[in-house]
Length: 322
Ligand SMILES: Nc1ncnc2c1ncn2[C@@H]1O[C@H](COP(=O)(O)OP(=O)(O)OP(=O)(O)O)[C@@H](O)[C@H]1O
Ligand code: SF4
Ligand SMILES: [Mg+2]
Image 1 (cartoon, rainbow, N blue to C red):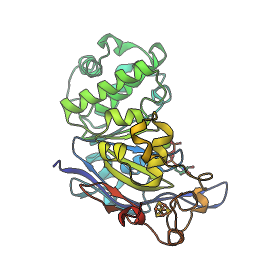
Image 2 (image 1 turned 180 degrees about the horizontal axis):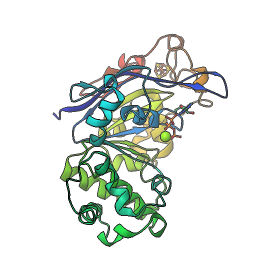
Image 3 (image 1 turned 120 degrees about the horizontal axis):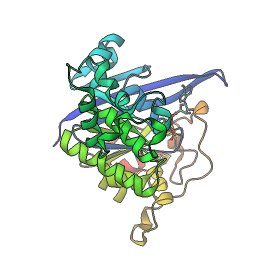
């Protein structure tokens, strides 16, 4: 059993929707454990709250309720300054669009060294040497240290984003759709680099993605989100091979290649996803779920272990009815 690096307990994040002038619950009472050295995939439709969870964990935004515990320490209780001093170098992020996230006016060496400089950890080392070593770790030629963003391919740009993220030897990186804008062949390369870095440096990843086939390749564990809630978690094997929540079944059967042996797992949802401004009562899926019964309209669903850490928020699954 791996130890837990991060416990997220009952995390809630509410935005004030400017357009509609009302609260929007982006993340709703989410609880999840992230194990040390593992990659947890966070999947779900657009707007389900995936990036918001990533941003809350790194304190890029403040949470409204709940706890974020990192190696036993309450991160959400740390003062902003203390978080920056103690935690910023241990927790990093790689963004979806490397073009947007790299400063066009800075040389690549200054981009990758930025987190080390911010943490005051250059300790008199030769900047060219340190930057070159970081580029080598992501399989880029160290001679690129004097280049600028526009001189690099999208794949190389994303590798620079990864080099910057690993510069301070972090324990944890949020990867927010890191390969979704890359061509398939480049994507596989970048995924391999991420997997190799995890092996050599022991980094824990939260891998946010729409692309379930990528998640299946790189992740150890998966959490499925629907309307701000996690509705199923487990190992990749549990969730991909024996999904139990009707939403996971629908998501997987709509995206993955049809496999006749898994026909019994398929599930079709009715209608459209509701607005997060008008959250359904009871089970959030009840407006679309083919297995819904009247009780689902009022009964809030708790995450329950259905065996070996496979956790599902559906009373009908837990009761063995579906
Ligand atoms: N700063 C903000 N202000 C108001 N609402 C926001 C803000 N950021 C996100 N939201 C809303 O919160 C909800 C969750 O957004 P989030 O970006 O976390 O979803 P996501 O799962 O990452 O989606 P995608 O797959 O499209 O990236 C959405 O309804 C979104 O419109
Ligand atoms: S609780 Fe009811 S509505 Fe929700 S997923 Fe289960 S069967 Fe469907
Ligand atoms: Mg997102």
